[in-house]
Amino acid sequence: APSGTQALQTPLVTTGACCFGLCVDIAAKGSPITIKGIKTASSPGLNWGQGGAVKCQVYVTEGTSRGKELDPYPWTKVGESTSMELPMVSWADADPQYGHIPLSQPIRIEAGCTAGFTIHTNDLYGLVMGVGSGGGGDVDFWHEDENGELSDNMGMFEPGQVVAEDDFVSVKAGMSLGAALFEEFDNAMVPQPGGLAGVVEYTVG
Image (cartoon, rainbow, N blue to C red; front, side):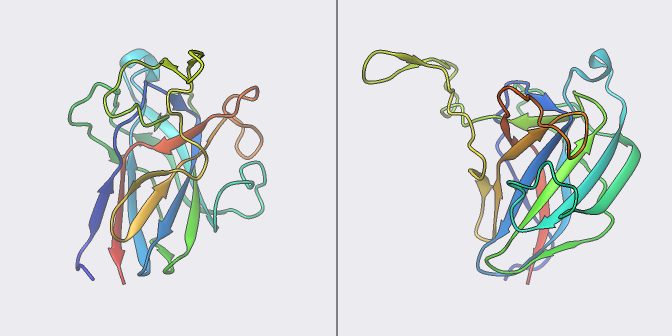
Protein backbone atom coordinates (compact mmCIF):
# COMPACT_ATOMS: atom_id res chain seq x y z
CA ALA A 1 0.00 0.00 0.00
CA PRO A 2 1.21 3.54 -0.63
CA SER A 3 2.52 5.43 2.36
CA GLY A 4 1.58 8.95 3.27
CA THR A 5 -1.57 10.84 2.45
CA GLN A 6 -3.11 10.26 -0.98
CA ALA A 7 -5.31 12.82 -2.73
CA LEU A 8 -8.08 12.07 -5.21
CA GLN A 9 -9.33 15.18 -7.01
CA THR A 10 -12.69 14.96 -8.71
CA PRO A 11 -13.07 16.37 -12.22
CA LEU A 12 -14.61 19.83 -12.24
CA VAL A 13 -17.87 19.09 -14.02
CA THR A 14 -20.18 21.82 -12.88
CA THR A 15 -22.21 24.38 -14.74
CA GLY A 16 -22.00 26.73 -11.81
CA ALA A 17 -24.42 24.55 -9.89
CA CYS A 18 -24.45 25.20 -6.17
CA CYS A 19 -26.41 24.17 -3.12
CA PHE A 20 -26.81 24.59 0.61
CA GLY A 21 -25.56 21.08 1.10
CA LEU A 22 -24.62 17.83 -0.55
CA CYS A 23 -24.48 14.15 0.28
CA VAL A 24 -21.34 12.32 -0.83
CA ASP A 25 -20.61 8.60 -0.64
CA ILE A 26 -16.98 7.50 -0.33
CA ALA A 27 -16.19 3.81 -0.79
CA ALA A 28 -13.00 1.91 0.02
CA LYS A 29 -11.95 -0.69 -2.54
CA GLY A 30 -9.63 -3.60 -1.65
CA SER A 31 -7.93 -1.97 1.34
CA PRO A 32 -9.22 -0.06 4.33
CA ILE A 33 -8.74 3.70 4.07
CA THR A 34 -8.87 6.60 6.49
CA ILE A 35 -10.30 9.90 5.30
CA LYS A 36 -7.98 12.65 6.55
CA GLY A 37 -9.58 15.61 4.85
CA ILE A 38 -12.19 16.71 2.32
CA LYS A 39 -11.75 19.86 0.26
CA THR A 40 -14.33 21.70 -1.81
CA ALA A 41 -15.27 25.23 -2.81
CA SER A 42 -18.01 27.84 -2.70
CA SER A 43 -19.86 29.24 -5.69
CA PRO A 44 -18.82 32.57 -7.23
CA GLY A 45 -22.37 33.70 -6.41
CA LEU A 46 -21.49 33.82 -2.71
CA ASN A 47 -21.99 37.34 -1.35
CA TRP A 48 -22.31 38.75 -4.88
CA GLY A 49 -18.90 37.49 -5.88
CA GLN A 50 -17.12 38.72 -2.77
CA GLY A 51 -17.06 35.31 -1.15
CA GLY A 52 -16.79 35.08 2.59
CA ALA A 53 -17.53 32.86 5.54
CA VAL A 54 -20.39 30.42 5.76
CA LYS A 55 -21.48 28.11 8.54
CA CYS A 56 -20.79 24.45 7.84
CA GLN A 57 -21.72 21.16 9.45
CA VAL A 58 -20.37 17.77 8.42
CA TYR A 59 -22.00 14.45 9.27
CA VAL A 60 -21.13 10.84 8.51
CA THR A 61 -23.21 7.66 8.33
CA GLU A 62 -22.27 4.01 7.94
CA GLY A 63 -23.05 2.89 4.41
CA THR A 64 -24.59 5.01 1.69
CA SER A 65 -26.24 8.38 2.28
CA ARG A 66 -29.05 7.48 -0.10
CA GLY A 67 -32.41 7.20 1.60
CA LYS A 68 -31.12 8.84 4.79
CA GLU A 69 -30.97 12.44 3.55
CA LEU A 70 -34.14 13.49 5.40
CA ASP A 71 -33.54 11.42 8.54
CA PRO A 72 -31.21 12.86 11.20
CA TYR A 73 -30.93 9.66 13.24
CA PRO A 74 -28.32 7.66 11.25
CA TRP A 75 -25.91 10.61 11.16
CA THR A 76 -23.04 11.54 13.47
CA LYS A 77 -21.61 15.06 13.44
CA VAL A 78 -17.89 14.99 12.64
CA GLY A 79 -17.23 18.65 11.90
CA GLU A 80 -18.61 22.13 12.42
CA SER A 81 -17.49 25.66 11.67
CA THR A 82 -19.25 28.96 12.22
CA SER A 83 -16.94 30.73 9.77
CA MET A 84 -15.69 28.46 7.00
CA GLU A 85 -14.11 30.33 4.11
CA LEU A 86 -13.60 28.31 0.95
CA PRO A 87 -12.12 29.41 -2.36
CA MET A 88 -14.68 30.20 -5.03
CA VAL A 89 -14.62 27.95 -8.08
CA SER A 90 -16.50 28.21 -11.35
CA TRP A 91 -16.69 25.63 -14.10
CA ALA A 92 -14.29 27.63 -16.26
CA ASP A 93 -11.40 27.45 -13.80
CA ALA A 94 -8.46 25.66 -15.37
CA ASP A 95 -6.74 25.16 -12.02
CA PRO A 96 -9.41 25.17 -9.31
CA GLN A 97 -8.28 25.78 -5.74
CA TYR A 98 -10.14 24.04 -2.94
CA GLY A 99 -10.29 24.45 0.82
CA HIS A 100 -10.89 22.05 3.69
CA ILE A 101 -14.29 21.55 5.24
CA PRO A 102 -14.28 21.07 9.02
CA LEU A 103 -13.50 17.46 9.97
CA SER A 104 -12.83 16.90 13.66
CA GLN A 105 -11.60 13.32 13.31
CA PRO A 106 -10.27 10.93 10.69
CA ILE A 107 -12.97 8.67 9.23
CA ARG A 108 -11.97 5.04 8.75
CA ILE A 109 -13.69 3.03 6.01
CA GLU A 110 -13.11 -0.71 5.94
CA ALA A 111 -12.26 -2.51 2.70
CA GLY A 112 -15.33 -2.92 0.53
CA CYS A 113 -17.38 -0.56 2.70
CA THR A 114 -18.92 2.87 2.16
CA ALA A 115 -19.31 5.94 4.34
CA GLY A 116 -21.91 8.57 3.53
CA PHE A 117 -21.16 12.23 4.22
CA THR A 118 -23.48 15.20 4.53
CA ILE A 119 -21.82 18.59 4.00
CA HIS A 120 -24.26 21.40 4.81
CA THR A 121 -23.89 25.19 4.82
CA ASN A 122 -26.19 28.10 5.57
CA ASP A 123 -25.94 29.65 2.10
CA LEU A 124 -27.34 28.64 -1.27
CA TYR A 125 -23.94 29.45 -2.76
CA GLY A 126 -22.06 27.68 0.03
CA LEU A 127 -21.02 24.66 -2.02
CA VAL A 128 -20.30 24.12 -5.68
CA MET A 129 -21.16 20.71 -7.03
CA GLY A 130 -20.62 18.67 -10.13
CA VAL A 131 -23.81 17.87 -12.00
CA GLY A 132 -22.74 15.64 -14.83
CA SER A 133 -20.08 14.31 -17.08
CA GLY A 134 -20.46 17.05 -19.66
CA GLY A 135 -19.35 14.58 -22.30
CA GLY A 136 -15.67 15.39 -21.91
CA GLY A 137 -15.74 19.06 -22.80
CA ASP A 138 -18.89 18.78 -24.88
CA VAL A 139 -20.65 22.10 -24.50
CA ASP A 140 -23.62 21.03 -26.59
CA PHE A 141 -26.03 20.06 -23.83
CA TRP A 142 -28.78 19.03 -26.24
CA HIS A 143 -28.54 15.61 -27.83
CA GLU A 144 -30.86 13.92 -30.28
CA ASP A 145 -31.93 10.39 -29.51
CA GLU A 146 -32.68 7.73 -32.12
CA ASN A 147 -36.04 9.27 -32.94
CA GLY A 148 -34.62 12.75 -33.42
CA GLU A 149 -36.10 13.87 -30.12
CA LEU A 150 -34.02 16.37 -28.20
CA SER A 151 -32.87 15.31 -24.77
CA ASP A 152 -31.55 17.77 -22.21
CA ASN A 153 -30.41 15.44 -19.45
CA MET A 154 -26.87 16.68 -20.15
CA GLY A 155 -25.47 13.41 -18.86
CA MET A 156 -26.61 14.32 -15.36
CA PHE A 157 -25.23 12.35 -12.46
CA GLU A 158 -27.41 9.65 -10.97
CA PRO A 159 -27.30 9.09 -7.20
CA GLY A 160 -24.51 6.60 -6.49
CA GLN A 161 -22.76 7.24 -9.79
CA VAL A 162 -18.97 7.24 -9.50
CA VAL A 163 -17.71 10.82 -9.87
CA ALA A 164 -14.03 9.96 -9.41
CA GLU A 165 -11.99 6.92 -8.44
CA ASP A 166 -8.47 5.61 -8.16
CA ASP A 167 -7.01 2.27 -7.11
CA PHE A 168 -8.18 2.61 -3.51
CA VAL A 169 -11.25 4.82 -3.27
CA SER A 170 -14.31 5.85 -5.22
CA VAL A 171 -16.35 9.02 -4.72
CA LYS A 172 -20.03 8.82 -5.64
CA ALA A 173 -22.72 11.39 -6.32
CA GLY A 174 -25.42 12.02 -3.74
CA MET A 175 -28.42 14.30 -3.40
CA SER A 176 -28.16 18.06 -3.07
CA LEU A 177 -29.82 19.50 0.02
CA GLY A 178 -31.92 22.53 0.85
CA ALA A 179 -31.69 25.13 3.59
CA ALA A 180 -33.21 23.02 6.37
CA LEU A 181 -30.77 20.26 7.26
CA PHE A 182 -32.27 16.75 7.14
CA GLU A 183 -35.63 18.26 6.16
CA GLU A 184 -35.53 19.09 2.46
CA PHE A 185 -33.78 18.48 -0.81
CA ASP A 186 -32.33 21.37 -2.78
CA ASN A 187 -35.14 21.39 -5.31
CA ALA A 188 -38.34 19.84 -3.97
CA MET A 189 -39.83 19.53 -7.46
CA VAL A 190 -36.87 17.74 -9.02
CA PRO A 191 -34.38 16.64 -6.37
CA GLN A 192 -30.99 16.99 -7.97
CA PRO A 193 -28.05 14.67 -7.57
CA GLY A 194 -24.63 16.25 -7.37
CA GLY A 195 -21.02 15.20 -7.16
CA LEU A 196 -18.34 16.49 -4.86
CA ALA A 197 -16.25 19.14 -6.58
CA GLY A 198 -12.99 18.94 -4.71
CA VAL A 199 -10.44 16.60 -3.19
CA VAL A 200 -10.56 13.59 -0.87
CA GLU A 201 -7.39 13.14 1.20
CA TYR A 202 -6.81 9.69 2.67
CA THR A 203 -4.33 7.10 3.85
CA VAL A 204 -4.37 3.40 2.96
CA GLY A 205 -4.17 0.51 5.42
